[in-house]
Image (tube, rainbow, N blue to C red; front, side):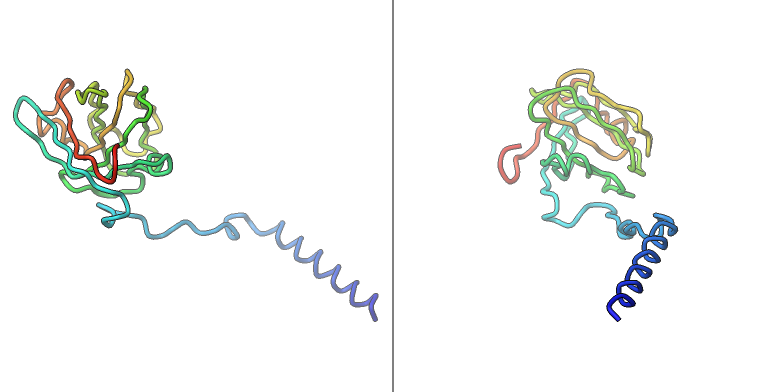
Length: 173
């Protein structure tokens, strides 16, 4: 009786292993999240901060999310399908250094402003291509990077050398 039971258990185990091997991984892999964030995330998910850009044409105001942690910075604006006209994301670069970005999994064009530690804009990359895996680097050490909707820098007259300031939220950036 015990031998029959062990034999049946071995057969079941062998069948389960054979089934597991024959089923494509796509059928057993966890499904991706279906709900992806669009627009601004709920208040409290990412702290927001007011950002001011002083241009030759005047002061430009933004209300942006802050990506403080390595995980938040890696995620950035991936999967976002829209941004408010004066929204975006600020990435503090600590310690100061050359910053490298790409647009992988980012479905909207972005303007990327590389900001020196003194607050001046070192470089503006306009309308970075959605989904691109090309590296976009600051070209010099920076203290922060600001991503805004693609085309806004040109529309607002934001250029290299303009000054950027932001209000500190939830402690020092």
